[in-house]
Amino acid sequence: MRRDVTVQGNPIITDVHTADPTVLVHDGTAYLYTGHDEAEPGAQRFVMRDWLCFSSTDLLSWTPHGPLVRVGDFAWARDGAKASCVVERHGKFWWYLAMNHATVPGGAIGVAVADHPTGPFRDAIGAALVTNDVPDDDGRDHTNDPFVLVHDDRAYLYWGKHRCFFAPLDDAMTALAGPVTEIALPAFEEGVHVHHRDGWFYLSFGHRFPQRVAYAAAAHRRARGRWRAWSTRCRATARPTGWRSSSSAASGSASTTTARRRAGTPGAGRCASTASTTTPTDASRGST
Image (cartoon, rainbow, N blue to C red):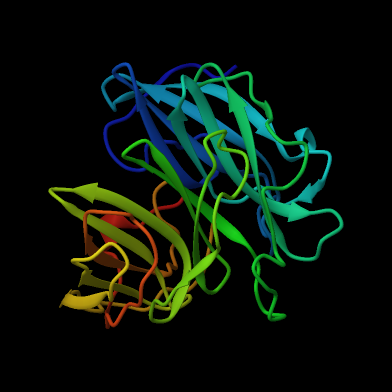
């Protein structure tokens, strides 16, 4: 096992190629879960077979816990360990993970469960929670990037496949408990994330691909009303030239767009937001 690493800045993980970070805070410890790219230098494609975890109590010293989940732990999966999300509910830790399905074309979402943030994790269902034909497959879609929000003792699953979808989860956290609804977002690409603050829900997502970063926000005052743009800011400074898996940011990046809605049921709705372009400053870009 690798030794603890104390960092002085970004990137925080430098001895292994990581991607798609998600963070859980439990009992004063931050758990950073990431993808893991094992492609050799010069390779043109990612080689991603497992997911890693690092923990810290001060965000400076990080303890690696090795691969906690592998694609091979899911009998129904083939390859492609992509983005994930970990949440705590009912005293257990639920890890929602995107990967490629062995028999259903396209991506899929599985869920693993454990009694501790560092596992051991096991397949909670024995099958995919969402496959690429849910709710439909237009021939261009590829299911990815799950995100789970727990709010008012209910859980909601969001995911992308060049469109953004939402559905409530059942109390067991292992099945969809309601209709799948598309959230109409402008030029949605991937990476949906929802958080709640001061009575509002904020929805962030990757906007277009791969040339620019955008920021927008939309006010939503009803549980299932219309999303409206309320702010667009950021300015382009350069064009990215390439990609590499990284623990901070790839040298090229999809954009990030944020939408806002009033507290209530954090569900669907239309978005009328627009976005302007930006590229991260040199200080914010990096590669491991």
